[in-house]
Length: 330
Image (tube, rainbow, N blue to C red; front, side, top):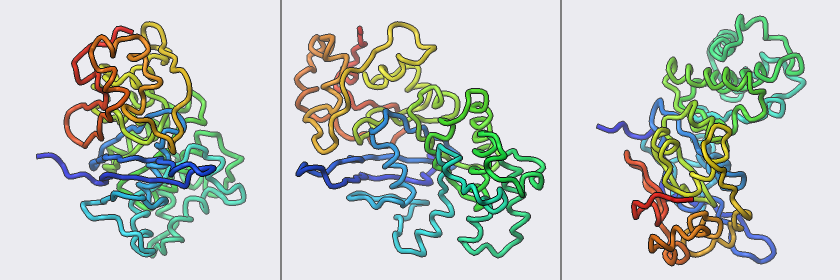
């Protein structure tokens, strides 16, 4: 029997007012996504695709325009007290530890801040020490009185993670958690997140533009383009046998990828002017190469929306060409 999701987005839409008289900007446009207990899901896509807005909505920082979010099977309550309790269980880890930490606060105060906000009634010192230790800063007392500028980048990121762990969450939302770190430190932080999943049963949504990072840490991958998830599946399914041309293009530019990189031309469309048909069709290598025409789906690509992917156990792709079973020749 499938484990019920810990966190779920159901038909989620987030729109913002358009600029200069344009229609609403649909930053998140009908997303269905499940995250199960102890599972790490990588949310992947180019900058501006809507993945950070989706993450903020899942954290309760942005209220959806339509659709709903459920946590442990219950709809998210946006009243003050309920939202505060929810944010204790679902914690954010930002990409820039320098920007996340107040330079005037010691490590102790930075980690203890969440406890104080939530009125922790237990032993504050013990809770801070335990969180720092779990984050790999040992012995924790050695770091209590240090300031952020006295730490390395990796140590600062561990302090940020400790600040999330101290509240004993069930889910971390990590927005580009290693983007600002040196390559030598990135592996240590990713290994830490995997260890926390094993030791604490933590689930995580890792927001990233880096499919290589997804390979190293994720159980499942959701690829996002222009506000919508266009491919999803296990990390092996998506990264070894990608079916959507967008995913294929993202993978082709990785340093270790075989063959010629597929450089996407142009920029993603304005989210206030989402095109008809497949929202990727104007940049799609399959259309440019004639592959979609030969497969008989070019007109559908330009005029028919492939639809919204729904959570399930099988790999899915919102692509007319992939649904024909054709293998791309570009």
